[in-house]
Image (cartoon, rainbow, N blue to C red; front, side):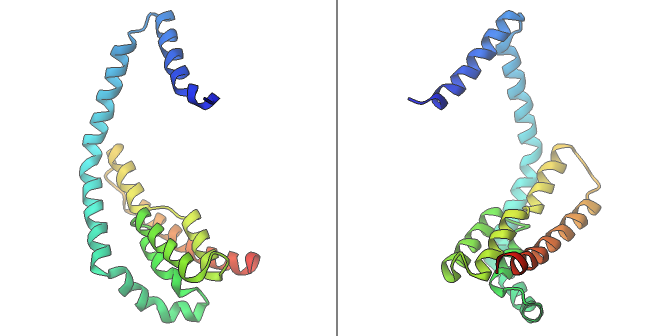
Amino acid sequence: MSFTDFIIPAVFAFVLIYGICTKTDVFGEFTEGVKDGLRTVYDIFPSLFCLVVTVAAFRASGAAGIITELLRPALDALGFPTECAELAVMRPFSGSGATAIFERILTDNGPDSYAGRVASVILGSSETTFYTLSVYFTAVKAKKTRYALAAALIGDVACTVVSAVSVRLFLR
C-alpha cells in the first residue's frame, strides 16, 4: 500500500476529529451538504439534458461535417489544416465529440503532423463553451447570457486561429 491509499481515510478522520473537538454535528452538516448538492443537481439537470440531446442531434445530423465543408475553401486559403475544421466546430459543443475527432486526426495524420499539432493545441486550449455556460449560468441562476456567449464564441474562434499560427511559427 502506498501513501496515497491513506489520503481519503485521513481526510475523513481529520474531519471527524475536528468536528468532535469543535462540538459540531458532523452528520447533520454532512446531510445538509448532500441536500444542497441535490438542489444544485435538480437546478442544473434540465439544462444539461437539453444540451446533451442537442449535441447528440447535432452530431447525428452531420451538421458539423456540412459546416466543415462550407468552410473548407476559406480554410485552405488561410493555410489552416482542414482536418481540424470539424474539431474546431465541435469543441464548443461537446468535449467527448471533440476528443473522438481529435483521435481520428491523430490516427489519420500522426501526432507530429501539422494537423495533429494544431488539433492538440485546439483541444488543450479551448473550452466546451455551451456546456460551461449552461452549467455555470444555471447554477447561479443568471438570466442574461447573451454577451457571455458572444465573448466565449469569439474566444473559441481566436483560439482556433492562434493555435494554427502558433504551431506554424513555433512547432513546424
